Image 1 (tube, rainbow, N blue to C red):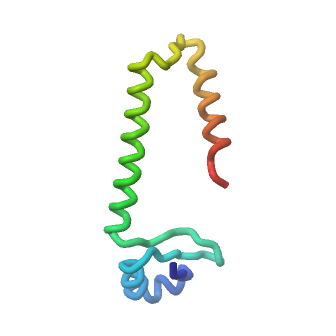
Image 2: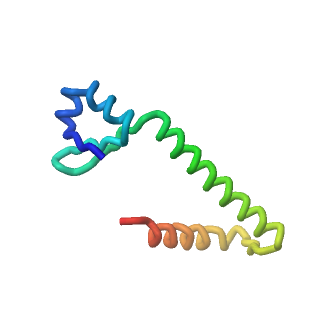
Length: 95
């Protein structure tokens, strides 16, 4: 992956676009990557993968419901359940 500073990317945008057509390009600010520029084809592949994963997760959820693998919550329990989901999501989030 090629790396360009924000200044270099702005000054040679055509070159950056050409590079992004071959492979993703990292754009850095103050030496830290802040963005990745990629070809439309690679972006479309990422979007297709995300959609595939989402559909698989929905299918798993539907299958669990059809098996009866769920817990009914009343309105009073809903806020606590939402907090547990948020906490679990924060623990799994990559650093």
